[in-house]
Image (tube, rainbow, N blue to C red; front, side, top):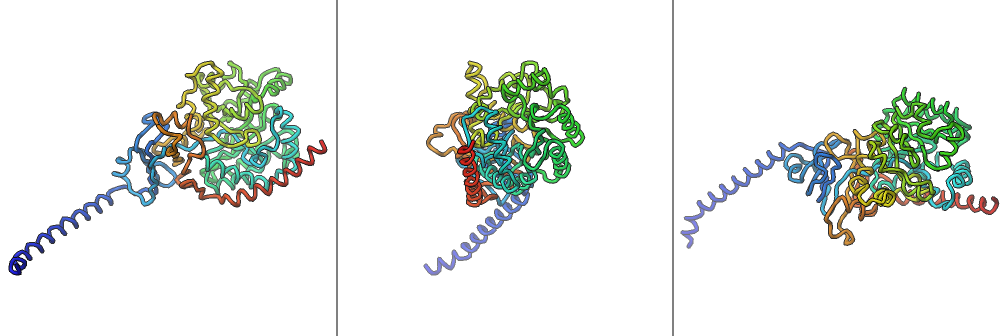
Length: 483
């Protein structure tokens, strides 16, 4: 036996040597193969990849490769893994990977007025409560606290881009830069006194300064003008906005055709209707983000079609204030750009785009007596690709395809109330809600991972908001006791 062992020992050593050579060869081959892969910053996966791109809107077992702020590749997991490598890989098991949601109209810091006063007519709500409380409380500190609260809520709910129209826009812009979201920040101007201003001249001068100083300063922040509405800003002043927006290549965000009272005022003052009124001033030739657009006439819809004018549909706010139901179907059929918005939390009372998406899909089926209008894909487009186009950012965000910014979210489909899953798009509109969002990325930066927001401290955000809320509650009680 000893002799046999001695006899076979050289063979065993030889086999080991051959095996070692094979293993080393495989290691070198794998290393060489890995070295040939393109290095990227992140690879994000999804059992279902909803691109919102016309070429391939849904990919099963998909992945997105990200370098810097941009998407470099989109495809199946096998395609991406064979061509790209990254140390930062985000699992997509039981998840939908899709573009982040676009909130086309809100007043972020008004989260601090959430539920302050409800169930009133629009003008009563505005003139007797909102405007006075803004005059008393709106300061840079108020804006910071309220904007951080809003940004936290939006990140948790899957919004990656929003259009804001509120006071102290520099403070809002600073919050946006820190928290990582993308935003168009519009500086408000109005013909009567407002927080920090005596009237039009100083508020519009501040808006011009804001746009000039913030333009090009940060890739996620776009400054804009925000004349309040056609009934609160004179034609002469609106013409100033148009001229400045043209000169500075800046967008305009404004409430337009929001309520019957506005229609009456514009008719009495100018013998026309809101959209025709601003069209005569040249506003439809600029990038206009027209919030609400509840009461355009068929002629006005034709005026807006094919232009850089986005009608932002705010179904919850409009229903709550009984402002009416926007003719979204007619606008889409005419070729008007249509997006979704929440409005401020004072009139909604949240910043949840999933609610707006679902309500938009359901509301117009009833309005048109046709269950086929605003199908799920159309509603989803208004919250993503179409919403981005409506606010003038369609070349940057709203789709997952190479060259676009890496703005995306993952949605968990693992809970029992989402089973079975036959149609991903249907689930996104009719079954999924904001609590199902598990991760968020904007311009390649991870803002939330596994439901934990990384860029804002929820305890600090809530503590500051609750303290400010106590001050507002005390003032509201005094006001109600001494009307």
